[in-house]
Length: 566
Image 1: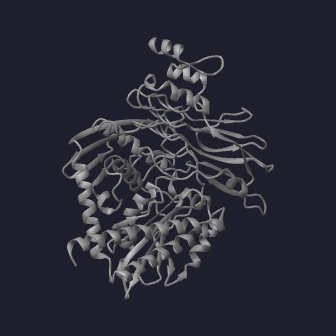
Image 2: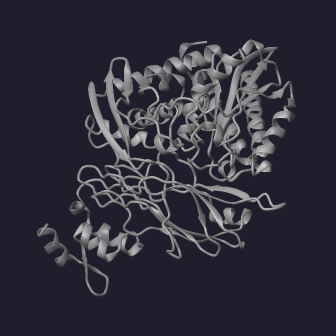
Image 3: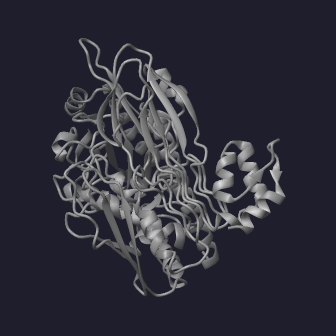
């Protein structure tokens, strides 16, 4: 076989592997029971070699899951060496420090056998609707209060499900059918990925995937290092302040680019919190590396080799490197801000690439009704987001979750499976930061309960005190805001709270920062924003110096005078 033919064959096999793990992820979503799996797609899927290096990952999924899962399979192999595994086995954990950062994520690893020998591992993760304990509230003071902790153990033993573990899970969660259903979906999707791998190996007469995997990883590393070599050499620093729980949190980063790759040092970052907003290092690595890859090599495949060119360090037991047994349920509070933190470093090194700051962490809505008598109550998480930051040549995306990439959950789904009613869900006017390119809009939601019962509201929101910043003269996005429809009490941004019967919760999500001077925005673009309801007439005049006549049409002469006056 010629070198050219061999290269073509490698590319075809590589593409087939990516298709296999994509089908694996899609199967998980189709089979999943909870809204976080089947509606939001809060999952990850990938194929690994015998030593636990990720060869390929599914496009479907979130960076926090994918990039932390990329490192987690080695923990499984430390506990169960691959040569001790047997055909039909599968392993599970939700250990926050060895998987994806908090107990609500379940990860499953399955060995794939060929001719009696394990040749690969398929792994997947999903966010389950509940894992017991204090649920999604960050008010626990240690991980023990946050729910059921499952160490790395067998969920399937030679084809037989571990019914003892399933009984323990069912006894500890408010939504046993959904959680157990998601566990079965995790196991099944790995089996589907393994079946597709077997078909690929049959077609190309492969006894194992070691040679193919090694070539994929070698070429990925070479391409990643070539992309890094095009960057200027040096060290750049950035600081971001976010709301925090008991006190504001300072995130610090120093990004160094040299011949070894990209290194991120989080020295100076605030110490760990007493509450569950701490972030284990695995999740910090996941999102910090994602921030680098977005800017440096967005088109390259994501695998162990490309991720290996990025290293991250953080002080021991700081809020971005929380030690066991710190509470970590809301670790996304920290992790999802890390791409913007890294972007602020790169903005000093490369021009016209880095977007403005986004809402960052998701504005998910977590509501429940407490059990009463024979009624188990319910717990539901619906995924929603504020606006993304404006880009150097484009407006920011509205109500779009960056960096997680997770899908919003349709309100009809939430209403169908609970007694909740969503009275309003709409873009929030004037929430996108003003700029030559406008920040993405947040959204406003009003939610109540059809049943005669108070709602338990699990709040863990950011950007209520510290708005997303604009770049290059762009203005910050609007801050988030929470209130009751009755106005009878203050709603805190974090913690367990009660929404009284017949009352509603009003959730106004932040907007993304703007990019460039607002006075450089085309008045026609501002007029279109006003027509679409993105910007009010008052906001256009105040933020963009764009005026309208009494009929609501763009007044060019008045606009020119306003802008000339500054």
